Image (cartoon, rainbow, N blue to C red):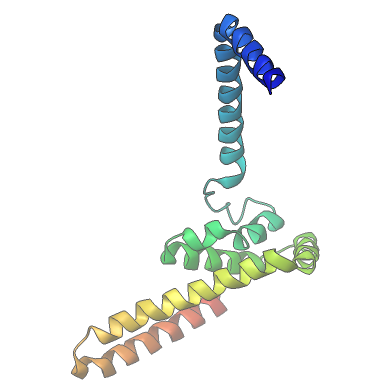
Length: 163
């Protein structure tokens, strides 16, 4: 036991002599670790805005649909993103089509689950938003709302068909 005490006292004496160097070394190590964590967060963790639909490669746009960041966008932005993406489908070149097919074929496991979950969350948000509007109107106005929503859906469908 005295041998262990001797070792501990020896280490304490050596650390006492070099306390300044030890403190600087540990501080530098902690600073380097903090800088590394900030770089990791900046490139891999932080929220990423959606890519440009028409300027970005197809795999980047499809990849964004499979990210958690997609479901953090406001509902209107997610809908707009999908509408613009469908517009790109209409004007897609053959090389983009092949790239997209290869990318979609390679999506498996957790990435596919995240993409599916993002679409489910969007559908749920649309339903909740519509239900909240429907519940908050007077009973007599529900028929007019149903007609208006139906005509908006029909008008949107026709406009998209003629693009």
